[in-house]
Amino acid sequence: MDTDAQMTAMIVQKLIETGEGARLQELLRAKLFECGWKDQLKAHCQDLIKEKGVRHVTAAELAAEVTPRARALVPDSVKEELLQRISTFLDRHASL
Image (cartoon, rainbow, N blue to C red; front, side, top):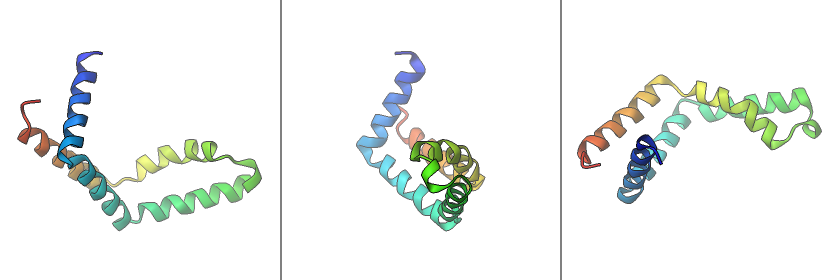
């Protein structure tokens, strides 16, 4: 395992051990709900299904088409807040 992968694994492990990972996930869910992200993706999925026909689209195809848009629709403010929280967490656990 290379150094970056080892560091990532250690950070993820510490996030899990401390419960911070779960708190960050909950924060992300709440922020995405507040900004209407889920509703936007739901509408996009419905449009794709109507366009292709329900019998002509698989869940895997739908996920492949929606994923890039889902990532792009996450507001920069949400990304910045999560990165700040992670940075603060790493500062507190600098022994990693």
